[in-house]
Length: 224
Image (cartoon, rainbow, N blue to C red):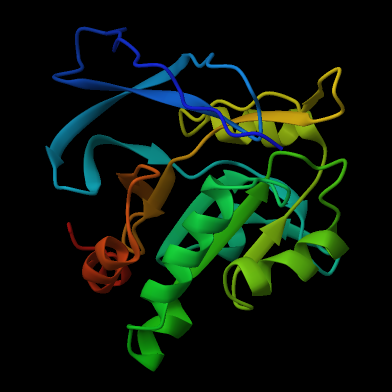
């Protein structure tokens, strides 16, 4: 699969209530053209090098999917009251997805044993036709960490869940040369154990050091 570099995008204000906005973009993992498009606006309270603290936190998506064991997984119920990171991607992604999972996995190792136990990392596939429960179970330990939760299901449900977080994803498409194009936002959303709200956003440029610095605070529901 070939990589795609997104174009520079203009931010768009959709409501007067937003004090500042940042346009989230779709990235084509494994594609060959340069197209990308804004999919949502988020109001920012503060921005560090890696993290954007959201002035208007996201409500946790109402998602019921299948985990790596093929069992029903209710995202809200399973992660209630727990510090949680959510990312939408796919196992055949050649760049952003494995790098993001690896960075979080490396940062997780720097936490205390108690904090590692609390932290939930959820990877939701954007390519459910290929990413079965078994495929996710095989990929996640090598790309990230055995403790990470992988979820799959029907694409419309996954797409609707992503949209609840302002993250756009398109159904994977095959090109004439046989390569598969999967367009998806590359943001990681951190949810507070205190409010269950998604209050911190990380872009694909966040490093393992960035996560390692912030995770102890996220585990406690504090602002990084």
